[in-house]
Image (cartoon, rainbow, N blue to C red; front, side, top):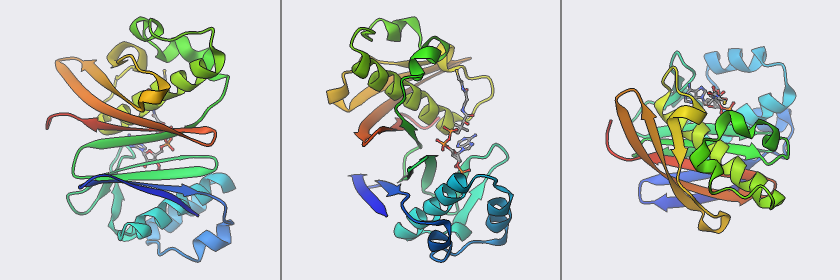
Length: 213
Ligand SMILES: CC(C)(COP(=O)(O)OP(=O)(O)OC[C@H]1O[C@@H](n2cnc3c(N)ncnc32)[C@H](O)[C@@H]1OP(=O)(O)O)[C@@H](O)C(=O)NCCC(=O)NCCS
């Protein structure tokens, strides 16, 4: 079911789907091109198939459709017109962001096991503002940091970007629902505005690239 549409600004919309329907139900409600049908058929997991179809439902909700959606060689989605699109799905939820700006989106299920991999993607400057002793807040904030880095990776899509060494998230509290981030990679120094929110047991993050590079 359509969970929420956020008109973030005049040219940016976020659409969220809660995947409650069966495969057949979703399949009967979407128009798919041949290439998409092939990809759907090649997917092994039912959960993945339903998520994939729910993204097509979101496209149709936003007056776009699967025929206008194309993927580049890296798997990054593009729409035929000028609008930027980014796609995410995780178990029960999927989301898309559509914008005139260069944007990325990520949704993640919050899990305690993120603590075990924190040192793989969190830089020391970020550990500096995290409080490991408040466990629930620690998991929430780690999940935001992970989501920020995934969303920025989806915007830039450059080979060699390391979440820990090249993307830095500015200090934030969960109540802020906003922060900033910096990608420092080769000669590039790019800033991003970040928004985040918790939806049930999930964390949604979206990033806007500042400037036109
Ligand atoms: C590509 C990647 C960003 C996808 O993220 P994910 O969390 O696995 O999955 P999500 O559901 O959030 O996103 C999947 C969607 O991202 C989009 N996507 C895939 N590859 C992409 C790329 N290279 N650039 C932008 N978007 C991409 C697709 O739309 C895809 O969904 P679809 O194929 O069904 O349309 C991720 O797999 C990846 O490679 N991340 C970088 C890994 C990394 O550096 N990790 C460091 C760990 S320390």
